[in-house]
Every structure is written in structure tokens, then in C-alpha cells.
Image (cartoon, rainbow, N blue to C red):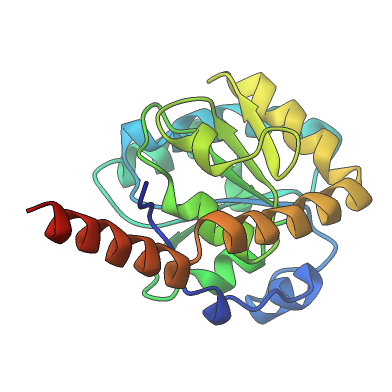
Amino acid sequence: MVRNGVALEQYTPVPVEDAKRALHLDPGWPVAGIVGRLAPEKGQALAVEGWPRVLAKQPEARLLLVGDGEDALTLSDQAEALGLGDRVIFAGFQADPLPYFAACDVVLMPSRREGLGLAAIEAMALERPVLAANVGGLPEAVGDGETGLLLPGDAAIFADAFLTLYADPARRAAMGRAGRARVAAHFNAETQFARLREVLADAANAA
């Protein structure tokens, strides 16, 4: 099988505190982020819905939404209605999203439907744990309990999982290391190109 891949050498893990400072975020703030098009199927609304539950335990926590799309106004209105203020940061479209992945203690993918989930692979390449919905191709990308957690599409469950993981830096670090190793083993672009060449060669020989 030929999978999506990333050029791992372009993904250099950095300490999350340094990445937060680079984006003018306080290094002491708990940060969760979603990188991708703002659309109903990507599940940002679920994360926003659960954020008051996070703030009840971590009042300085920030939810970082990186991307643009048809749900931008709806999400902004939702955050305002919940009184979230600057605890939800709308970063807009970013041509280079890697600094935003790096600034997250945990990356969220609460999608309603998803392919393989390139954002999960990019997060893991940067040694960030991923909390992902158990849908589509995400179970193939995220090693449940190893590089992150696969969760049902429930706002409270995602919020509680973030709080639990944030409170355990050693587990987050271990998941991050395991994530990069998983990308190196299964989603490295160089490896995938080699597999593609093998597939094409086999097809040519069979013709």
C-alpha cells in the first residue's frame, strides 16, 4: 500500500515553550490546536463547545484554530456566545502551518469524516500527540494509546482527554517521540516514493 507521506527532514521538533514564544503565546498557557479548513466536517465546533469545560480546570488555556473556510463566522459566533473571548484564537490561513503545530501541547482532530489525516501526520512528525476522532483514515494514522488517542465525537470527552494529557508531560513527550517514529516508519515520503516505484515496476512487468 502506498500512503501519503511527508519529508521528515523538513519537520524539526522544537520545545513547545519556544514555539509558543515565537507566536507570542505565553509558554505557560495550555494550548490545543486544530489546523485545517474551517468546515463542519472538520469538527472545530465540537472543540469550541468543549472549551468551557477545559477553562473550568485550566483558565488560561487557549484553543488555536488555524485555517479559513465556510465555517469561520459560525465558529466565531459560537465562541462569542460561549463567552470564550481570547481563549479561542482564530489564526486564519497560514501558508506555513508548522509553527502552529509546534506551539500546541496537543493537536486535535475532532473530524466528523476524514481521509488519512495529513494534519495528524504532520503533528506527529513534530512530536506532538494527537487526539483524533475515530473516523475514516485517522485510526491508520494515529496509534491509539501510543501516539495519541482515538476518541468518539463528543465535546466533553475531547475536553477531558486534553486536560488529562496536558497534566501528564511525560506521557505527552513519550507519545510525541512515538509519533515521529511512526511517521518515519510508515509515512516518510522517501519510503512512500520507493513503494510507488515498486508498484509501478510490478505493473509494468505484468503488462
